[in-house]
Length: 187
Figure 1 (cartoon, helix red, strand yellow):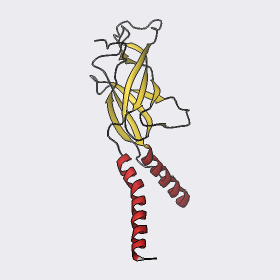
Figure 2 (cartoon, one colour; figure 1 turned 180 degrees about the vertical axis):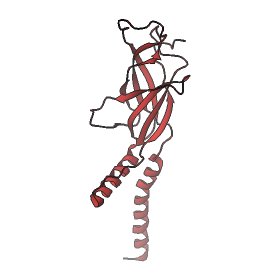
Figure 3 (cartoon, one colour; figure 1 turned 120 degrees about the vertical axis):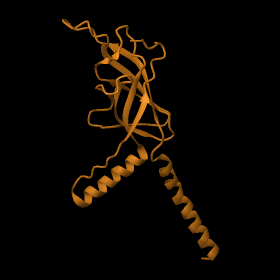
Figure 4 (cartoon, rainbow, N blue to C red; figure 1 turned 90 degrees about the vertical axis):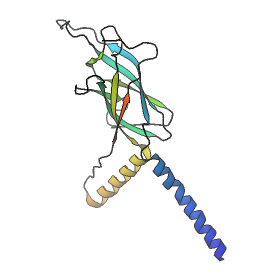
């Protein structure tokens, strides 16, 4: 093989190797990949003997979680918290995947539906979502990074018969966008 042919083969090999490396670098941790929009607030009927002093309505919120990024994202779970009460307790936001799946993968440009747990600080008695709003604290990983982490964990387990837990997820923060057909209600 001539010297020119060898250089061509090496250059082609390096270019083909660079493509997945560049993909991994760009997709390792995209900035703010998820957007959360409330689609409905379902108030719970007041229970018998409940105090009427509580100015918030109990209920759950249906949420669309959209991947606005260019890479698939694994959504693990999130928490809804009132913006004006940062130290208050939060309520979990779960995806609709089967219980045995700790995550759900959201393809780029697509969305999933999720529902919050019941909590009395999210809603307003008039049926809207509290104002100034609700923030979402969520845990996620880009799918390419998750595949690498999964492979490393498998490799480590195969060699050591012990599980290796990475501090895997990234924590993200976003504001919950209110439903388009209903305005937020001032408390």
